[in-house]
Image (cartoon, rainbow, N blue to C red; front, side, top):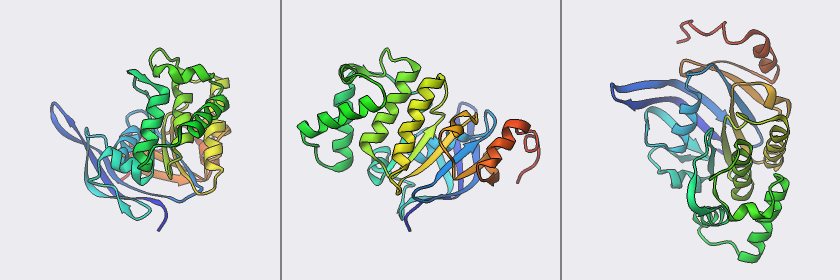
Length: 253
């Protein structure tokens, strides 16, 4: 079955005080062509979901399953998950001094495809992708995220999304720290990716403003480590008016 399927997912994080359960039974299916928006208050576990799916070693999957087009992801390394078709755009992209954007992109593409892309056509694709995100060609010679503005970091993430073209993309608060112009540029990049028709997106956000530009197929309310409500895009409009008061503090088990 072609989908990203999460079943009864339980995840704990390692702390100095011991293991702490963050995700308490998450069920979610993302089909090709769908955009699923996850919204919820701070500390509800949204980013934990993103990092656990991507394979961050800090987050231990203690129960449930995750599969991508029938491939079991639990137990796979980060790079193996990427090769299977999973992509994570981080809320806080890290700096990689001494590694140029161009070298980073080509190395990542080679690792995922199992062979290096032809240099001539690859350089053209990189430049075209940079242009669509309104980044000049000289940007590719800069060290990854070093000295980048917040908007440049997020646009660089979407360049990666475009060129690596994974089956499913997890976007962890990609809209945070963006002004209105950068938000539109990033949203257009995501919409081009989704527009292929066979790509799925898990979009994690605090705010509805990005959903004015990226139309979600489904909206899920995330509270205390689980999905407590879901609906279509109109649910996001309701949340803008009412917030999460109806669920926060309640026993949603």
